[in-house]
Image (cartoon, rainbow, N blue to C red):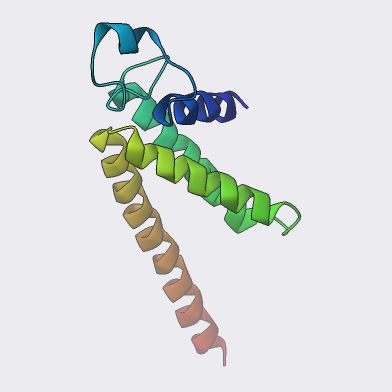
Length: 117
């Protein structure tokens, strides 16, 4: 819920619905759409939240799947507009590692079932 509120504030700053203290001190308000922390910390939190939501999408019983997918799209969009490359890097590396780990288990289960027959 905290990341949802942070998402609303960040998109509000990005689309100039409201301003922060950065707007008076700097010209680059579009470059600083994070209100509470630095780009590095915020992008890491966004990356972690996106990974949790992807896990929720894969394990959910299709009850709120559309709502969760839309929320993931907003988080991923925020990850891109917040300007933190570290969060994108950790997100991509983690997705690659999880897909390798997941596909390895699928290949092992296919090999084990072929031996039974």
